[in-house]
Image 1 (cartoon, rainbow, N blue to C red):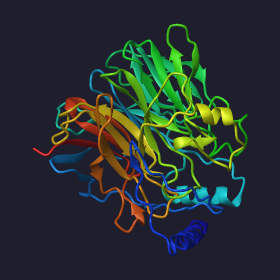
Image 2 (cartoon, rainbow, N blue to C red; image 1 turned 60 degrees about the vertical axis):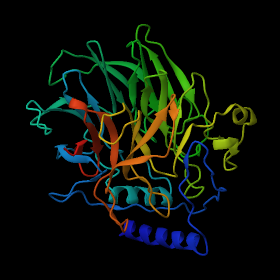
Image 3 (spheres, helix red, strand yellow; image 1 turned 180 degrees about the horizontal axis):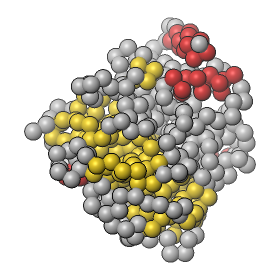
Image 4 (cartoon, rainbow, N blue to C red; image 1 turned 30 degrees about the vertical axis):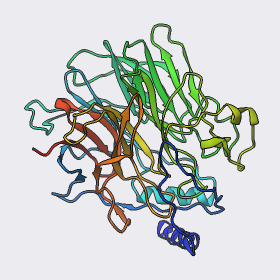
Length: 429
């Protein structure tokens, strides 16, 4: 009942904001025209009810592509990792209810619960194997259990690394194994909670690991002390065990990927809430060693967020992102896709899983998109790969895409945490 009341209040607030106003155009591209911020005393809450997929109903693939369920009946699949022997690992985890401090906290919790975005976390990694190559996994094993909201995964030599919300853990791995047992070795501690996902990416030489650690709050609402060591990408030196902040001011950097021609690290970042439908946009950006990207003091164009106690020196050093992805798209998944991997996608580029908004008057995201690259940079508008996760009236979601990766045989795999499916995208013929 409370969730329905929240939805009604949210709809009323949205109607008032739209009255006599035009809807902001999506802010996308390398030179975005970002509207003026309009701080919201009552933040927008709008999220579709999670419905899932009916039998025979699948996402809509771009022309020339086909999609099928590689694996089904998972429990909130978030991230995917493909092993050298083509075993597909899936981290099944979920945001857990936090401490309810205010009525608005409860409103957010009720909204998220209705959308299947918060609940009991499975806290495991599952293994799927397609031995006969028909594009559907026939083997399912629990690869690793009893973790704490596992997310990122990486294999380096004979060590398997897991990004739990509270730290980076290493496990011995034997090639072809379908299960890992034991507690593993804790290498790095992370502060849990808030933006809880911990993505991982190994360097090509296997000497370093990079991990995304999001902020606790929206705009350092509880002060900067609790945000220390957060809103950052970490670098771990495998040989020495030493870790450091590689780059900061990244509110919630999730997906990580290498641009292979330049060997530059890229990430997708979820920006702050409460300033408007398109203010500021989520973004895709290259990441400089030692770089600072503005959070919480400012956003794109060194635009100061006057809700935050300011530090002019930090504003001055902030770096503008490379490419806007639209407001509140919740761009989470990221992987490099070489030219020709899928028919009709003849350029190199990045694939992005857009989980979808919950806090804007017209929903955004709920799609898997492709951003073409040239000379190491984004070069053109995004193109849809998968859509149809959201009902046309925006009342229900059939699914929400998260992790994306290139799978066995050159397919694209997509984790869908509302549909509880791993989708497989290939050419239609």
